[in-house]
Amino acid sequence: MSELWVHTLTWADVDPARCPFELDDAAAKELTALVAPLLPGAEVVQDDRWGSMDPVTSFLVGRYGRWACGWNWSVGEGDIDGGVVQAWCCASHSVTTEEATAPLVVAALLEWRGWLEDLAERFSALAPPAQPAGQAVDPWHWERACTRLVTAVADRTEAESGWYGHCMQVLGWFLAYNGIDEERAQQIAETAVGGRFDSWIAPAVTVVDEVSSGFARTIGESR
Ligand SMILES: [Zn+2]
Image (tube, helix red, strand yellow):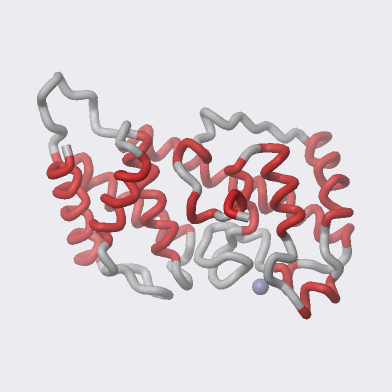
């Protein structure tokens, strides 16, 4: 099931520019009808909620690409943990009848996609300017980007549960967007955060400043 695992999504997997997606009203209706028969019964998820949405997730991934596996990465303790989606809570709270539940899946997918598009816009606005060969980027650019992105993710996840997992992932995605190898990018993000963020609490400004300067420093050392 690893291809359904949101924590391993790379920027290449989710970059909206590389994964085109359009869903007009007719296509949304069609998708709703395709999702409905894949839903578990409400009585099933009360007993066994874990993995009960996998058939839906597999279908969405097969149809749209790996990015779509984040459709139910909801805020707080949901099917996954510490995500951004509001339209879906978790299988045991969100699954009722097919007619009511299938549109929620589509709304959740659109919400997740909207977040990825929002991130791509932020990345573009925060990317350091191109430098002449041999010149390092002013660390101020990396610090500013880190502060803005941490704030955006804390806000969007409402800093609920293990929100910082997605936060580190987004920082890594930003570095990958700027041409740093994906694996190295995730390492830099994790080193910079270094366990300074806690569950269920938005970080204090001083902590964000510390993480942002560590982020800039680690990038500087790795180039
Ligand atoms: Zn729930």
